[in-house]
Length: 355
Image (cartoon, rainbow, N blue to C red):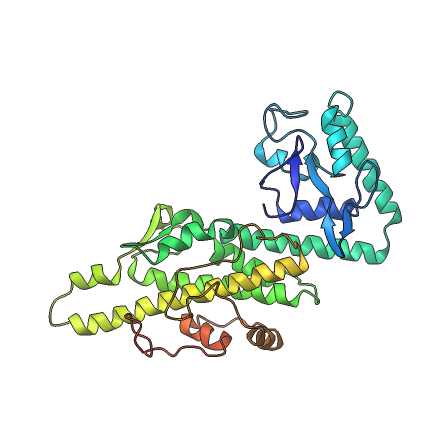
């Protein structure tokens, strides 16, 4: 669940409401129940706790209150079918669907949002607009990089034989997402989300270019290989088995470097993804990946192999101070050298892990 509690029939469940849609509902309701106008963020034990829900007007599942089979999945999780309610009002609304009809719930929500808008100050409006901009950016990055299925696709890119990158995760991050993220007019006080988003996109683009080196995959728009189920790379072992004796040692050196570059690239992507997740929790959604946890990869020769791959606080401060500049294909080793405090040097690490 990307955006906090959302439910129907009193049951909290995972759903596909986008960050932008969630932010719109919460902002326009001013974090107040649309029916009773009580605050749905309570101070419990000194910490803020969510006591409200993004509730569906028409149920998301057959048999639920006010279910409408004519709606598409996108419409069910869309802004028009959601209303912010406290726990008590949510139970009341679902217990009496014959009284709280679709039209009545829409009227309750619209009246509440108009009441909130009448009381909206200039500063409130600015905060709401900022929240919507940032939520749009988060949705773009999460969708185009398939971050909600990170474990599924990263587990295959470096083994077992052969290396495979599922085509469903290869969305147009180079053609669409990267320019879009770089083109966002980022709020000045969301610096960590801006830098981490741009770095994550750059990391994926560089990793993709390296991965294509031995795949025979043509990443250009219109290429027939774009429709393949997997972007397949033979492993180093497979490639070496077909090499001749004369060129074996040189070819092995080249492939060891390629393998090390791929592994380093995946570690760097993971570090960028975890910084991005931290920034989303800071600026947009405190619940982002709370259930799923940190982005992970298999233990690597480029990290200690303990816990998630993350940037140190010192690295983050340095990257924030330096800012982000677009470089022409710096390569995996180049972006790592620019980002890590103790970046490994090319040639120092071999495929067997011995420096």
